[in-house]
Length: 79
Image (cartoon, rainbow, N blue to C red; front, side):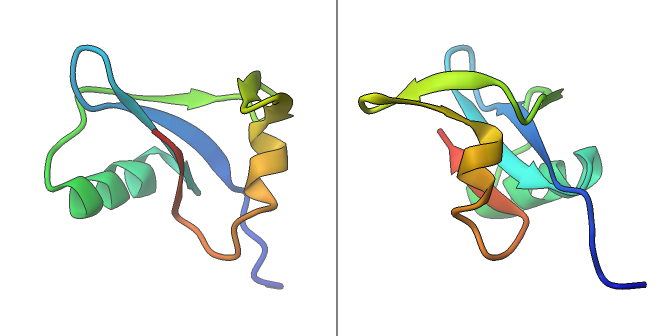
């Protein structure tokens, strides 16, 4: 009713070694956004926890931190 939607992060495999992380409402939205943006079908699509930590530059961040950097969704979180 208020227009709030849960946003998750999905890992979509582009080829044997590369992945794209996409913020989206669900698996289907992430796959459609990927296909539209990269003009190919992903090899697979898996949901990751928003609190997954990784190193970006010299800092440790989570997908939850990165989500705050985007104003609209779906959006690419990283490659």
